[in-house]
Image (cartoon, rainbow, N blue to C red; front, side, top):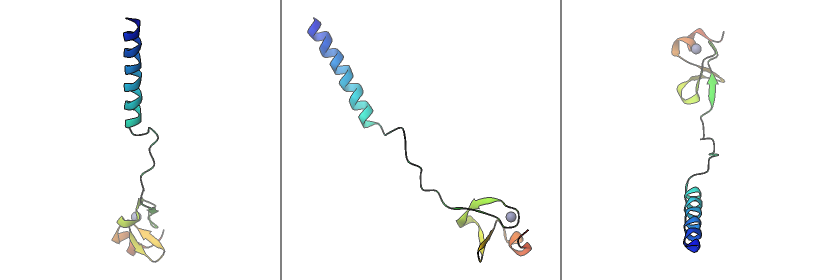
Length: 70
Ligand SMILES: [Zn+2]
């Protein structure tokens, strides 16, 4: 009887161990985030792909690009 109890205990421990090993690690890596740029006119932060680039500067909209840097 004691042997069966120990076997069950080992079974549970083994099951917990394999379950833990199968699950992804809790400390997941940061996803590759796009570079954020600030509008040269109003300072709004946005992904570089969403911004309107004008040379070295980035703007949130066409209107701000025309308005220029603050
Ligand atoms: Zn802006």
